[in-house]
Image 1 (tube, one colour):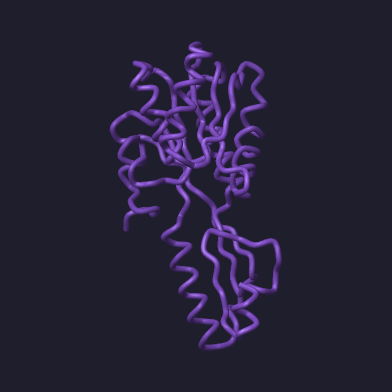
Image 2: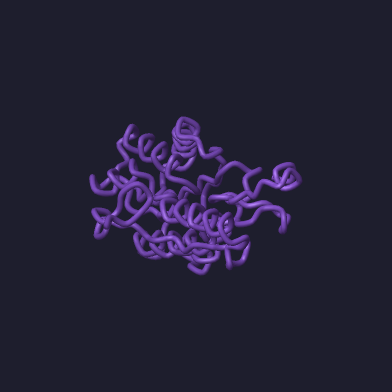
Amino acid sequence: IQKAKTAGIPSFLIDREINATGIAVSQIVSNNYQGATLGGQEFVRLMGEKGNYFELTGRESDSNAPIRSRGFHDIIDRYPDMKMVAQQTANWNQPEAFQKIETMLQANPNVQGVIAGNDTMAMGAVAALNAAGRSDVIVVGFDGSPDVIESIKAGDIKATVLQPAWRIAEMAVEQAHQYLTTGSTGLPEKQSVDCVLVTPDNAHKFEMFREKE
């Protein structure tokens, strides 16, 4: 991005941010912390404010992973009867999540829930649970991916947090056009877009990381 700026080429970042400011024109990201608190609240509600749970975290080098985990825990840890009995990274990966949940389940069969830092890991978790005959375990994800929206409709995964990626992409194009035609977006460089909770009640309203028109 620095090389592009030096060459006079403006950059508009979609759902990824850099620490430095003044290099990209726009950095438009999902509000991962706000989204994680939504997911945490729904997870606690579904669990009845008590029970043992596993957490699957994302790739440690990705800044989104600790932010989402912190958002989950800032809610869940308020409830003394919610006990995290295992926490492992599955690096945003579905087969890895499947293997990790399989192993966790053998060590801790008395579990009622799984909260995952993204939907890909949630899909791996629910597949491992179903393979073990544990469809009673509550799984909550994060992303709002089409596969998980369908899983929620089917009654497998119970909830996810949708990142409005469609709208973020539109914003980047609108701001690029504004910048190229006027020399300014007229907006702050760093922009945060709130996430939305998706449950069986509203899953039919969403597709491709957006609310249907």
